[in-house]
Length: 395
Ligand SMILES: C[S@@+](CC[C@H](N)C(=O)[O-])C[C@H]1O[C@@H](n2cnc3c(N)ncnc32)[C@H](O)[C@@H]1O
Image (cartoon, rainbow, N blue to C red; front, side, top):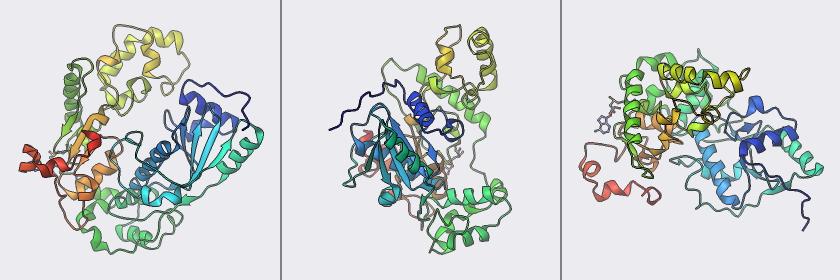
């Protein structure tokens, strides 16, 4: 076997990704955001420093694509797993995994990935040499997609995509597009169902203006911010080393979860802080870090400075006293209305620990989902039926 002359030794995936794209002369600014692996043309990337178990990383990519389908985003035809320090890349066709992509997974793509196996062998590319780099460049030029099917889980995502691109379109135009795709012809198979199939989620398929008139079940954001502040105080009181869950038994469409952190606190940029804390606290924090910012980060954009960098310089206020890492991944959400479940899954399915009930209990022919009634005996008392919903991975 040919041994490579020198392997790389990146310390973070981010650092390796930047070098990887520089090597291929692709600008990282537009295509990849902070800490996401990202999509470039028809390729989904999954970067790791090293890859010892290809199946595990592939499954992570598949789960990511599964959520893209739910969100109504095109599925890149290629999956490229990149082992940055080993300088190897593994290329798969996402179409070979359509069945897996069209499954519904609860929780972050990076969790619980040990059980996936495939006999399909990837194309392995050694990019430590010019030939490999050229091959990669050719691959990355390809802009193809894998078509997916429309069903109750993804129809709201695709409807939103359609109305965003065609703000004036009506619902009948949407159905026309789903039945014989023109704008979506590379992305979806023609939908063969009847309008009535989606009768219980019909108002979710309305254009945006109509949808705003719904909204009876939304919790207003000042209330959500206050609730999150109180939840955080409780988290801070946990004895060191203890884990926690946040259980929202009547989560509706998930507004109460909107302001929970969905990444490590150190990876949040100063721009992004607005989403997680209120303006007053942010102003106080920035004033407190003013000298640090002026001395070390003058000329930097707030979108490029992370909390982690500011927190290297200790001052009176630490944002870690207010926020915890990935709070939403500790959250279990429940709802009993089909409509709400669909929105909840689209919005938070890839972030929360669990959605109750799981997708297998969601039937489009029923306005309520089976097992989501928070007032039922099995929900409150934890009868056998209730426990059955929680997979062993979470216990
Ligand atoms: C005040 S709203 C909360 C909305 C939620 N925080 C949101 O942002 O959408 C109450 C929610 O409880 C749900 N709900 C009412 N009774 C329920 C029950 N027995 N089991 C589960 N959910 C229920 C309703 O469908 C509604 O979404």
